[in-house]
Amino acid sequence: RKEVEQDPGPFNVPEGATVAFNCTYSNSASQSFFWYRQDCRKEPKLLMSVYSSGNEDGRFTAQLNRASQYISLLIRDSKLSDSATYLCVVNSGGGADGLTFGKGTHLIIQP
Amino acid sequence: GAVVSQHPSWVICKSGTSVKIECRSLDFQATTMFWYRQFPKQSLMLMATSNEGSKATYEQGVEKDKFLINHASLTLSTLTVTSAHPEDSSFYICSAKTGHYNEQFFGPGTRLTVL
Image (cartoon, rainbow over all chains, first blue to last red):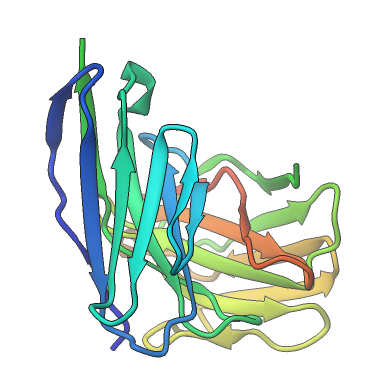
C-alpha cells in the first residue's frame, strides 16, 4: 500500500524562527516528490518540487533522501503568512499517475 | 499560471439525489484529470484518474457506478455522485495536468453536504 507519513503537529513557532518538517514514504518506486501547502478549507497549492540534490526557493529548502525514503522541508525566518498545513506528496509513477498525499503537518506562526 | 475551475463551489442536497461537479482547465489543455476527496482532518485521497476520451481508472475501493466520471474534452471533466448519501459528504477536488509538466493544478474544490 502506498503511504506517506507525516507528524500532524501542530507546530507552534514564533515569527522569525526556523522550522523543519519531514515525512517518510513507503513506496520505494516513487519517482516524484512535492511539498504542497493547504490553507483551511482550500485546495492544495504547490509549494515546491523536491529533488535528490536538494533545492531551495527563497526561505524554503527541500531535501530528499531516497535511501531512507525521507523528505524534509525547512522554512527560515518564518512569517505569519506561513501558517498553514504542509502536505508531503508523492507521485509513484510519473505519466498519468495520481498523487499520494500525507495527512499534513499543521504549522502555526505566532506573533 | 494554469487555472482550474470547479463548479459548484458547494452544494447541499437530499439523500438519494445525484450531484454533478464540473472541473475545467481554463487556459490549457488537460490530457489527464484527477478526482480527489478529502474528509475532515484526513488527507486527500485519489478517487480516479481520467484521460480525455477514455474510461476513467478508479482507485481500489471507489465504486465506479456510484462516482461517474466523464472526460469528454481536453478542458472538461465531470464527476457525478449518484444516489448520494450522508457518508458521501466530503470535499471533492479535481486536478489537471498537461503532457509537458509533472505538476498538477488543482481546482478550488466542491464541498458536498448530503442531508
